[in-house]
Each structure stands twice: as structure tokens, then as C-alpha cells.
Image (cartoon, rainbow, N blue to C red; front, side, top):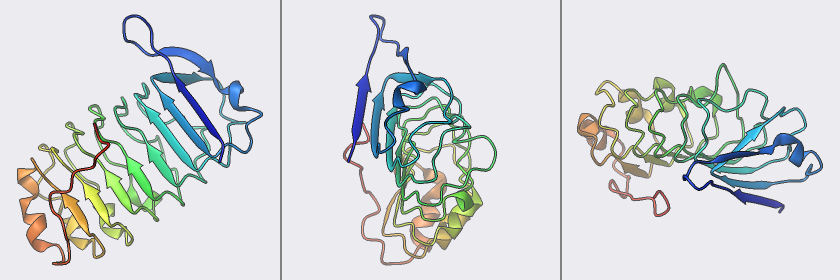
Length: 200
């Protein structure tokens, strides 16, 4: 597995925009990319297309770059981002199983989950400006873990959560509007107060 990691920050604690996408042109076999406090600029036409795991903390964009190839991704970790939405327009990420958008304080809406048909684990902890979980979440047949901790603005009518037949772990701590979900979900849910150890 190939790994590229970068973490840069200036004296004021602000991420530096110091990495251009051309740096990845020859990394055609790159599978695991970890970025923290780094901003990319340039064209994504030759960005690694075999990338399986992308961890990009403190992303300072309102949505993922439109040209970024995501079709092979299995895991996407974008905690502490400035995202307002995951992507602009329809973008099918067919293989994605793990999505972490926790602490994305500007996030206004969840993705259309019909574009993430294989998703198994979804973490939205402390996305404090979310008001609604898209109804399409109910069609994620393989979703086993859902963390909605401290989404206190989420509206009560997000009842599509109750359609998740295979859900095993649910955290709705601090979500008084979603207390009904724990009662309506299948009884095999083992832990309603799951805490993700690396979410901070």
C-alpha cells in the first residue's frame, strides 16, 4: 500500500496552500493518502485513480473538487472540514463503505445517499448546522453504524432512519429530536451510546 502524508501549518496556525496536484502525477499506484492542514490546488485530471482511502483533515473547501476521481474510494475521512456539502451535483461513489464528516461545522446538508449505495459506516458527529438527514439514508441496506451525536438541529421528521434494518450501532446523544429512533429501530441494536475513539 502506498502512502503519502503531509502536514503543514504557518506561524498563525493557518493551513498553507503549498501543494499542487501535479505532485501526484507519477503516483499512479497510490492507495492511501493522508493530508492534514494542507490545501491542494490545480487540476485533478491526473490525480491517482486507484486511491482507496482518503483522509483529508481540515479541508478548507465548500465541497470536494469536481474533478477529483472518487470511484475507487472505500474510505473517506474529512473531519474538521469547511464543507457545506460533500459534492456539487451528482457524484456516484459506488465503492465507499466508510464516511466521516464529523466536526464539519459548516455542513448544511447530508449527501444524497443513493450515490453511496455500499456505505456501512457514517459519522456526522458535531455537524452542528445540519438540520436534516436526507431521506435516502433509509435505502442504505448495508449501514451498520450511524453516529449523529450532538446534531441538535436535526428535525424530528427524519424518520427514514427507522428503515435501517441492519443497523447495529447508533449514537444519538444530544439529539433530543431523534429520541424516537431508538424505540422504532430493530431491537438488535447493541449499543445506542457508541463513542468513536478517534473522533476528536
